[in-house]
Image 1 (cartoon, helix red, strand yellow):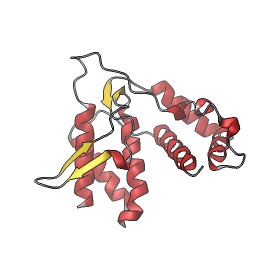
Image 2 (cartoon, helix red, strand yellow):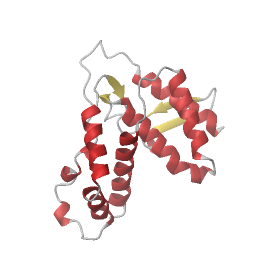
Image 3 (cartoon, rainbow, N blue to C red):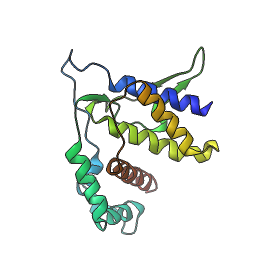
Length: 178
């Protein structure tokens, strides 16, 4: 059941990414703030030293590989396809009746952007949820990607994008603990 839902999620995501962009002046989706962590939070100096948020930013600053990944994602970012832009678990709706269907909500960040961001976000979400579902994450991620590729989704995962998505998740979690 979870595998089928993940495959349907991949199909729905590919359908979003392949919507025509020719008919209107489509807005640009905001680039992930994590591509420039120094500008994530203007009041960073007000955050308590040793907090989770500062710890994640310090880890970013001390990691040449993570900074290189953010730079690579920024350089490779495209704005040719519709993306959701904020594809978290709470923004994915699965309806099983009358037939399995996946839809997305909270589309205020939707616009033209890099479909690899949505893919990395979906994979990251599945990795986070799979222990709660008592499921093997790789099987669910494989099903998501299978649905995506079968529906001719244009995005492709690559290591730098996945690293930047993980950084964004770490900052989000750290920020929610403040």
